Image (cartoon, rainbow, N blue to C red; front, side, top):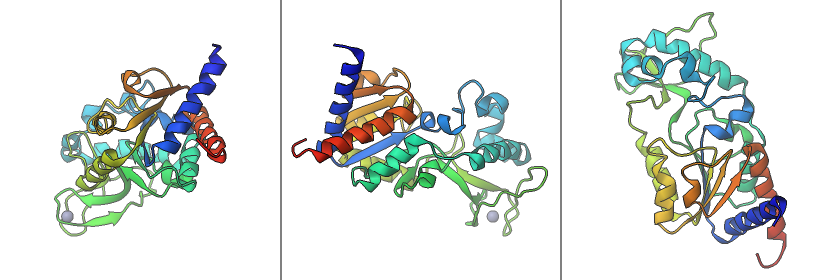
Amino acid sequence: MTEAAYDAAAYDDAARLVLTRQPAVVLTGAGISVASGIPDFRSSGGLWERYPLSDYGTIAAFRRDPKQVWTMLWALDGLISKAEPNQAHRALANMERLGLLDAIVTQNIDGLHQKAGSSRVIELHGAPRSLSCLNGCGTWQRQDFPKAAAPEPIDCPVCGAALKPDVTFFGEPIAQGALYAASHLTRYCGVMLVAGTSATVAPASQLPMMALGFGAKMIELNHEVTPLTDHSTVTLCGPLSETLPKLVAAVETLARTKEP
Ligand SMILES: [Zn+2]
């Protein structure tokens, strides 16, 4: 069998799973946003290379020196605010419009799924759109990065402690609401797509295996083979901005035939 023929068969298999194993849920990670100009934080050229994780990415670092951590948040905002969704984000938004995707569970904090038009997005690691008081006094406000020349920590107007963007820093627990929603979706989905993540960081790492344990099938879309590949029902390798639109096109084609 030629590679192209094998490829077509894999897309056909994946499309059939999407149509026959509803509801579908997708778990996304850094790989889906690379084509939007946001390098994987852990990769070479990623955020943690310029801003070492232990000094900038942990809750202990934020408590110790919010001013220093704000320099990283400032750089992050520069990356995210310029980024536009790519074909992979748009394909998932399209899949939702077709009524074939229940929800997106994402490890990303860039908001690009929502920007692409997806409406049900569970952000496992939060998002920097809002700020909460580090002291837990209950103060919460929408994020509006100060457009000054230099990043400055923002103090809580009520108690004076630092305000922290609502992203999950290392050493912080995942927000309970997001975790509950993701677990619920994982339990009831018939097929889980895993896109742009090798799912190595907990708790996201547990979701694909949990879905399989509850009887779901798994479609993996990654740039290359990962530890998940051995467990997935179908694997579609390649850049996400190519494989996801191809999968959604295959689903649409198959949906037009009477008996998928
Ligand atoms: Zn406060």
